[in-house]
View: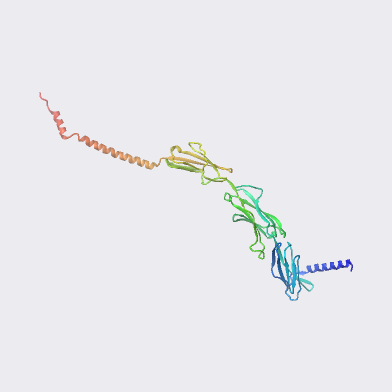
Length: 360
């Protein structure tokens, strides 16, 4: 037999096989049935399935690119010891007249991400309050990417979920971005992202998840007053303790300087204290709180008064009253004493003295 003849026979058989495959009827009434609706398998893992024909005398076969098949009457088994194909569409079939009655088995081969990481785009170091920044989550070597869902988190709060527009079956590297505005409350917050493969009910439960490391946000912002006003008016009684609180909130921590009415005193504390105020402490106290981001000035207008003017007035009135009583008592006593020196006898004797006519 010549080589040319053999080549023609092989070509004809290959053509016939391709013709049979293309003539596969996926809508036939009595289709073969797999024992699972679909196969979801991790790359490199084993699996096995069975296909059964609806008729007892049907001869089944299974078209596949990996694994081995074992026919057993109207049933055929397919076993794969190590899945090494990323994309395939195996089908089970039997011949009926001049066509094939076929059923396709959906096979999803997946691979969890090799690594997931989060970082800022074009930025390093601290961030500023109210400024906008872009976070990026990089997912490496994942498949199939169309089943991937990436979520950004701040602490346990989800910032947003992202889905790729990619139908690649083989592993790919992919990145997602999330825009975020920082506030001072976000200082110290942990930012991270997770990559989840949602492979359906036939896939692993719960779905495989790979999380990134945590990125701690350092938010810088200028000093902010704890109160609502930057000018404060304080009335304090003489002798009391004066506390002027200039505490502000800021990052980096603010420093403080003070200017007082009696001295350009520079203290690096947020609270200025005078144990016992006097009238000389009246005036304006100026506190400057600052850090590398900004500064704020707080003014305290202090007025020192008497200890209690009402009680002082009452005391003066009471003193005047007591003094008046005492003066009245002294006057009465003096009057009584003066009247006691002039008795009636003295008066008459004195009168007789003055009326006596001297003898000639």
